[in-house]
Image (tube, rainbow, N blue to C red; front, top):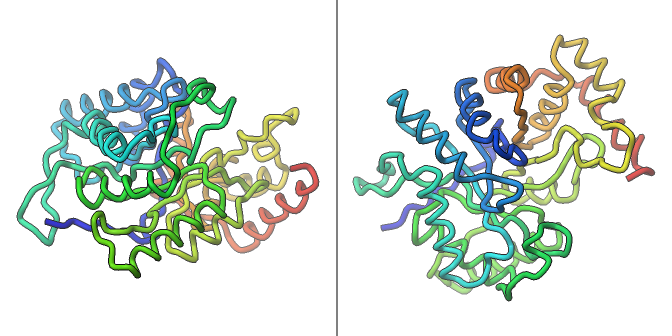
Length: 319
């Protein structure tokens, strides 16, 4: 059997991130579910994420309310220190699928009456390799596969195991993404099919109105790869007295104009620039505010978008 789920950039939308929620993960995910979120992003990397609590919250919520999982889209990531072998990558994906959506009923793709376990949405490589200081596990990592070999295992996750609908890369540089694209295309031309070569379906990287990751985004647009923005609200600007995105007078003026929050303006900017977003908050009021983007995600006009473009040029010398 072959289930080659392939989604285009029509999948761009609003999800909920679960990084750095710590002991509040279960309760926060539950609040997000109650507010209407059905797309969630997590990761296997402990310290930053609690994937187990995400899965427990999903299971309890859907079981208690007797809901099916049809519109549930859960993505997670394998950390670079776990890219140790072809079989280990596939096993990690299988274990994460079970932990996160194992309680969901099997699904039956349109092209077949044969059921398969309810899959993850995207399974990402969290980073191509470890670098010291990125995570405690990266201070003394094991020997791991290079990115090309790891990518072949990822292709097996979606093409042989059906653990995930899609596969992706996170924290990737443009030259690394181009190399994977070339690697895949060379194997397609060579007729390789076990596993079937597959371009990345999604790339997750930091982008905000000041530091836009334009080169990577343009590359994703060229190859029909979904670009998922994290830290869209400017939280990566750590060496400045205050968040330059959330305190921008330009953004504040646009927010007042539309009677929306500053966060909604920034996230709508991303959505209207072909990015998916995965904001997070641990406060119920903020979560409910973010959930408005599920039904009204696009509200900026051309004048607003032009004004937002000035943020990047104004700060270019400070990046």
